[in-house]
Length: 218
Image (cartoon, rainbow, N blue to C red):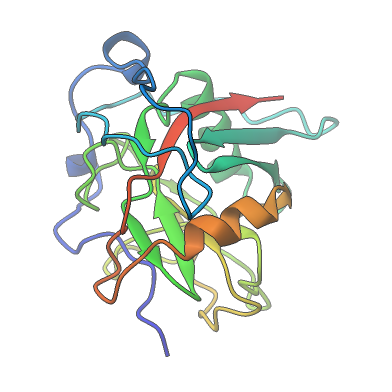
């Protein structure tokens, strides 16, 4: 079975943040090329790595509303419909981080073909986060199927722990245990996700830069 989509073990709860907010320190780099490569992506240099932190949100999302987050990348855009019923804390955090620009100018730092793509770490090391953790224990019946978006965690953290790092499943069934808070599902642009999912090597490293240029809540 594939290795689980964990953060690096050295990432501890409060140690995954620090520094200033992305909304005041980072902007998406200007593209210098508009021609797509063979993978369907616009070649780009990696944005500068940064340590970012945000305050933990104190309010839940409006239960009467449906929330989506659209990620615009140099390989195309895809939209996630959030599941605040299953993971209310992680969903509220995901929206808050998006609104603060936390995910802008970050990359998918881990790409495992036929498994997952993983992003949400502005440090690009696999150890970064927002400086806080939420908990939404998944039900025993949780399944990690194609398009499911869930929050990554370390093996030492409890089931459902979440910071800012997330993964998107790129296979019919990832075969993961119910340990990861499911924050939503890709409901538009799954072709883009599959395209990105092919851009990884045997060491789970991206073969080219895939940048989240901008994340938007609607």
